[in-house]
Amino acid sequence: MVKLKSIFSLGILVLPLLFASPAFAHQEHLRSAITHTREAVAAGRANKPSILVRHSTEALHYAREAQADHPNVHIKRGIYRLKEAIKFGNKHRSSATTIANRALQELERAPM
Image (cartoon, rainbow, N blue to C red):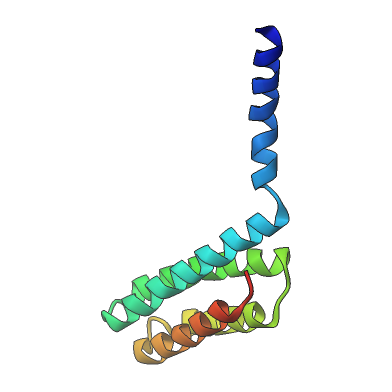
């Protein structure tokens, strides 16, 4: 019984390490960037520029993390576009929405 408890305890300690792998982190960061970028585009289409900027900022954070995990040209382009969407967000909602949509296209092209 004691041996079974120690194996179980070891499993609890090791299991989180398996999910902390760089590939898993990259996938999660990229998925989060894509999700927030989709939300940014939806907010722009709904004429909510402040929400577009907020989601673009969150997407930028996750895209930078994904780029740090596994550099890729599509993520790099997505980061550039997200910065542009944030810059134009409150003043030129229509342009920012188009730019955020281009960022989304780039991020979706990046390999998981």
